[in-house]
Amino acid sequence: MKSLKQSAGIRLTAIAFLTLLLLIPAILIQELISERENRRNSVAHEISEKWGDTQTITGPIITIPYLHRSEKEGVVTQTVRHAHFLPENLTIQGTVEPEVRYRGIYESIVYTSGLSLSGNFSPLNLRGLNIPADDFLTEDAFVSIGISDMTGIRERIRIEWGDRDYTAAPGIASGDVLSSGVSVSPVINPEIPVSFSVHLTLNGSSELLFSPIGEQTRVSLASGWPNPAFTGNFLPERREVHSSGFKAEWNVLHLNRNFPQQWLGSSHEISNFSFGVSLLLPVNEYQKTMRTAKYAIMFIGLTFLTFFMFEIYSKQAIHPVQYLLIGFALLVFYTLLLSASEYVAFNLSYLLSSAAVILLITLYSYSVLSSIRNSAILFGVLVLLYSYLYILLQLQDYALFMGSIALFSVLATVMFLTRNVNWFNVMQTEDDTEMGYSAGR
Image (cartoon, rainbow, N blue to C red):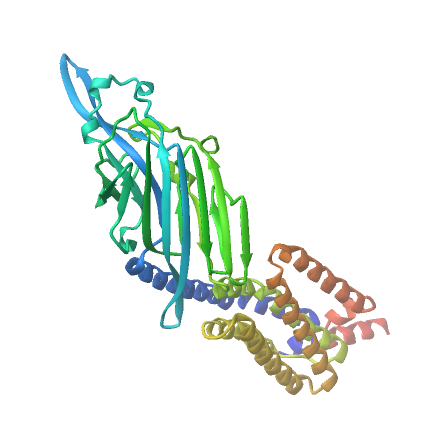
């Protein structure tokens, strides 16, 4: 114990060990943050299941069954397969009315969308599929519209096809292209072009996506939600985002995607080319708290380094238990931040949590160091650290660059302050000094 108190080298080793030891609770805190975030996501999923999940709209698509014949060992087998045809033009105009739903302390963004789909099919090129014309069962043809989550349908769907109206039925006879949606069975003459229009009122959550199935697909969306994220394979040609909402317009050509206007069976997966908008909550407190917690080792190391510098210059030893208590106080900041940010805004919770920890450590350091000057220096260091971390959280794209500058600055400062320290004398104990003195005589 005497050597621990008298040898700076042993104390420095003990400080390094305590710093590594405190990484264990720091990792556990990160797991706690992940657990709370997963809980929030689970609640959001439960709300989505009842209201309507992410919606992807695909269609309309004309599907015509045809007879497929195969021969094996002299036996001819006849099966029914499907040919699929996409529209020449597809125009979608819609509005998205967002709403925040709460369950306990958790919230989830949901919406109600009103979508008007219109366009036309040109005459169908049946010969281009190399199927005999007599093998097509045009009397069994149907038109389908893909809706990824049927739970979100709010009213009866009527499809205007040519000069007639049809009421859509749930389900699609062929699962080659669409796995979920509605369909109608109008009279289809492959040689005659036809126009269509349909209105959809759908509930959904988080995202609203569209598949670019038209030879030219135009989508126009407007909403009162001020925090959109345009997602998928295509960004809007024009967009306006302001505090009262957003407007966006897409224009996608068939040349921009990797599937044709007509094909047989399930040879193409069109859902991989969807695009649209995500409605983001303005603050994800769990992601910010997790980013904050990843700087725990830096905070512990720099705070311990500050105390060690006090030891060197004031010739006053600080016990490892006192270092440990200070380390725990630094870690409590993250649990305070996590719990407070679930109830109040992240910026306010950060201010309250950091102020509480800075005040606690400063008062404790005064009782340990018995120096107003050193306590004031420590207070300034902590304020600087937490202020700098807050800036890093705001500058996400430059966080690594700014963090590197901070570490370089700290290293340069320590090197400057210790440039005249004789580390050989500091590292040895008083007994070692006395032995060296006796040997010199």
